[in-house]
Image (cartoon, rainbow, N blue to C red; front, side, top):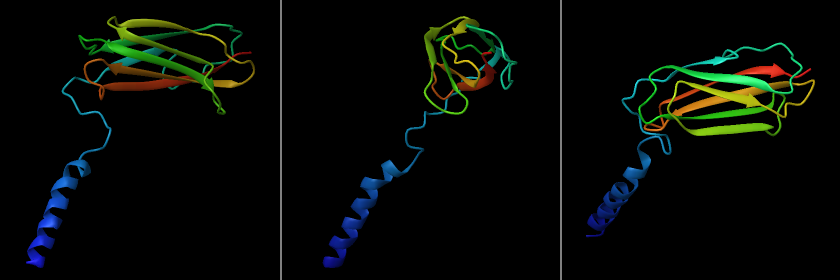
Length: 137
């Protein structure tokens, strides 16, 4: 009798724990949307020559597969050597292919890193991330 109770407890434990063990935790669920295609000016992956500033333009162009629900675009600029972001801007509901940003508050004399994240509004796992480096004279 003790053996049956013990086996039932083990079976119950397995049943209760199993749903929380599968999957990838908090990862977004995959979707059937076609992957976003994005270009930027300055170009993704480049290091721009030092410029006087004070403002630095950025254009994000969704060249293909803009979802009908739109996207959100987040731009963050921070010192490349580490530290707090000095510029952050999010456009939460973009339904056009081209979005323009103006990066401000860039510190002089140090390389800065820009990170751009474009996320589908209808499928959070459909995400494009890119960036570039630049500096203010």
